[in-house]
Amino acid sequence: MLHFGEHIRQAREALQEQDRTFSLRQVAARVGIEPAYLSKIERGIFQPPSEDVIVKLAGVLGEDKDVLLALAGKLSSDLQQIIIQRPKLFAELLRQLREVPDYAILRVVREVRDGQW
Image 1 (tube, one colour):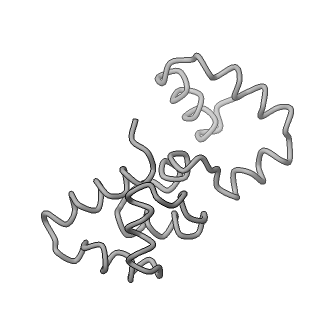
Image 2 (image 1 turned 180 degrees about the vertical axis):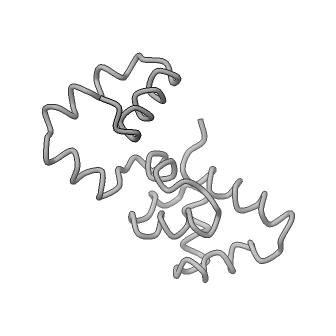
């Protein structure tokens, strides 16, 4: 599995092959950070940035923010608040889902989303 910076660099460079506006400098400008900072993140010299910067990077690069946050070893603040409200229940749920295949998790997600109890 790629590290956060490697993933960001590969995603940006793949987009840059089709569209030159995805240069390091231009992506950094759209996210609101210095190009040197983005370069150091991509090369793994700096740790992943804040949640806010990761979410902006996800938007610019067309990536899923939760996936990027997970690659950075972080959890979005909205998910943190959900877990904090019922920590024992969510901890148990996540531990039980650890070994469950993806299709089973998707089924649970669909049932909850559709309100089928």
